[in-house]
Amino acid sequence: MKENFPLNLGSNPPMVRFSKVTKRYGELTVLDSLDLDVKQNEIVSIIGPSGSGKTTVLRMLMTLEEINDGVIYVDGQPLTHMSQNNLLIKANEAHLRKMRNNIGMVFQHFNLFPHMTALGNCMEAPMHVLGMSREEALARSEELLEMVGLADKIHEHPARLSGGQQQRVAIARALAMRPKVLLFDEVTSALDPEVIGEVLNVIRSLASEHSLTMLMVTHQMGFAREISDRICFFYEGKIAEEGTPQQIFEDPQNERTRQFLSAVL
Ligand code: ADP
Image 1 (cartoon, rainbow, N blue to C red):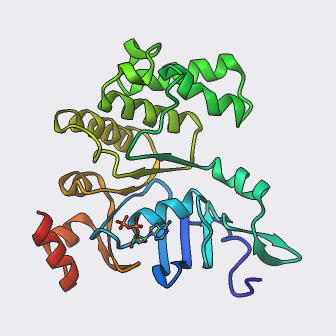
Image 2 (cartoon, rainbow, N blue to C red; image 1 turned 135 degrees about the horizontal axis):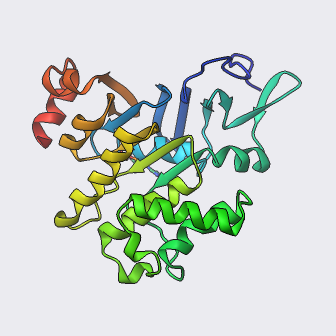
Image 3 (tube, protein in one colour; image 1 turned 120 degrees about the horizontal axis):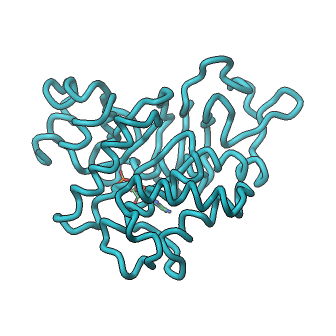
């Protein structure tokens, strides 16, 4: 029972709120009473050393694993909990399933269905999870695949697409669910250098032409700096420093941030 956390965040809530979220694996505390807000239409990048808990933040939002303490809210509603008799109790599977539909994720390794075409990959979840009609799912998927520059590849299977093309299908597939929040987990790290640009271009155009809330874990510092509204520097499961790209990259205040940036830039 969580008596100290509100049942919802009222009107005009942040799109995502981590409220004192702790995640442990055995003895290891990976997220340490983390507070993090992402506003509607904000683009936030998480940077930091390996093992600092960056990917865990995204995994918690995808409800891939349980948190040990604290509450996560999405669009003002608790994600990890639900209310019963005016108290928050741990969410059941049905609540998690419903809330999960608000969140889209693009993974490092694409995770496309190999036996389906690009179009099939995009249509699958809207039809089978949201109950969208075949016609509507088809029209939306075609539109999205065109938007990511793959109008001529819609009938190809993943094996016949380059890594960059597969990742663009994965972005279209995530958008097909009309998520409120889009998560990107190191989406360029498995790509050959020559195709990284085409994936970043798609994300860049999503950021500028569509109002989307995005939370991104990235090693692409230049890109994070260019498109983010805010940068969070993680260290040992906490936000050690956050600010605008200009603040973080040009005038970091925290010694850890300075060390990290001087090693990666
Ligand atoms: P980052 O994305 O910043 O590199 P992660 O969030 O992936 O860091 O991981 C944070 C820490 O949690 C690491 O020390 C990692 O080894 C540990 N960790 C992640 N997943 C598991 C797991 N399923 N079981 C045990 N430890 C894990």
